[in-house]
Image (tube, rainbow, N blue to C red):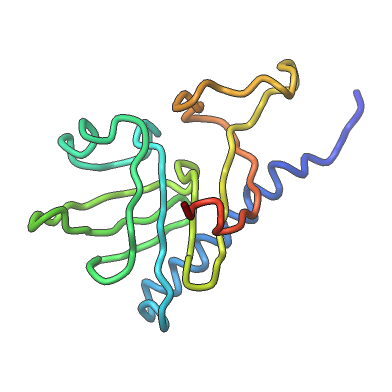
Length: 151
């Protein structure tokens, strides 16, 4: 059996570790300067915890903003917990790092987008249908320009 280095999994782990490092620092010291984050995650991920009404409203993915109104940010090696206000209603969320699809800090034009991992048996040109990304399994990551979110 031929052994090879799985660079996709190594990058996946490194970029998730980067997000963990950033959020851990923000949890300890607060957001510096104009930094803020747009985080899109898969609400179907088995480890994602959110109120039933939020899951019903966002059945596949949800984007949250960590900027002015968030409390109780805590991290562990698997994900982060935070309390956000929806209208006047505070809601606790837990987002596993493996559930994150995009992590963007527009203040410095930094962004990561995580794509579904395509098994080797599938031809590379076959992509999951829009909105049908697998919730489990490793995902590959890429650095993206903020321009892709601008209209």
